[in-house]
Length: 313
Length: 313
Image (cartoon, rainbow over all chains, first blue to last red):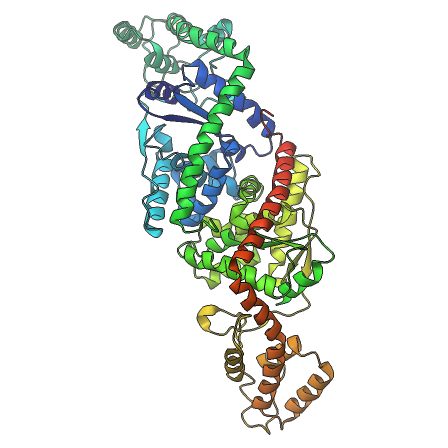
């Protein structure tokens, strides 16, 4: 949500590129390419339904820009294996995914591929979550190393834009939403699905009876309310009451349900509309990919010129 | 020499592809791309001057086939980091190059890129030295893993063709020739350079006076004679005499010089001729690259179809 929100905001100020990172998705889903394939359209639909305007933003598919793969190959020489092994985000993900010693080389090196994604469009700004900051650092390290070794000014450093919107926990309170855990609310969820998921949400496990005092911090229902409830004044009152005791979870959940229904209704309707016009969405993706490829080809040419490996031209 | 000899022999029986592996050269020369750039033409000249016929063989530049980079990205997901770290050839090279913990990711993963070089042309046979056998094994492992995971028959296993021609040692007796050690005889060397290098060659360090018995085994002069002297009967006699004692190094070196001069003369002349027609050579490379790219594009398309990531077509 945080990243999507920033994208919508930024599209009027910047020449925005939205990547559908299917090749990166394959680094830990190589044995399930159909999942990756199906998600390409879903990700495009998500972006468009929250308000990404294809007239302003360029939505493209990573695997359809071979220049990114080429650039990645050149960058791989500028990063050591041990540096990649020390990347905190990758380290954490390797642990989570139980890769142990069986990390695919494509997974360990995905920050290098990400550096290519970013720099091939000479990005100024990348909207990221806090956990993605090591990727921006790695990108800038490659940028500086490249410019120094090849005495070039082709690549430029990028700045992270950290969302003020905290990462939403799962409805079960787990740090990350995940399809397999069933703790996710989707932009495409129908009203009754939303209600069902909200009413089953985890709250403060110590808050058993309505009259008990409850915790707001770390309580997923309140994290969601913080994110979506526009009436901050009323929300503050509710929080105080909850903490004091005398407010049942059901009341709070009903409020969240209302807020979410209102927030998600126009998004879902737009999404349903787009789903009926998939050919139109595919056209948008193809057009965006063609445009992105033009920019990528220019940067790759400049990179090869800086390296003096543009042959026979 | 062994590999070049096999290439010339095979070009009449096979549809042969000759790679000028500039991207691989960059994995340990990323800070010296000009060296790589200059060698592209030199490698082409070497191949053509020993008898590679561009009408039969396709000579192409690796970096000009982006499909290889793309295929490498997909293969990187099918190989674990620890498997690459156990590759005996890479392990040995990391030691030789004193990379220690600073191995560039591009260097550690170059066997994956090589698997893409080989399989994108659906090669049956790769002429290699003994030390390159682990690369063929790694290639076949990727082939089998790909076909199994994606339930495909697109990729096929490759067989190594090991040269019966032993790897030539340096003129100083060191295992490998190297420009920086100055222990190399080049296909482009002028007659007096060849003579000078041969007369300065290392022999048996225990063979001090002509009447002393000398060792033939491990004696670089005899290794070269074994490789280039056609008159094996006469060579056997000389060897016996050398081992018995009574044959000076100068006599043996003079024989090697004659043999090498005769062997290298037509190659050098052809090379000089080609050097005067660089535009012609560039045309050959460009034509070969265009042809190679057509084949590569077909395989990549089949690979993406097997992975079901051919979108929106």
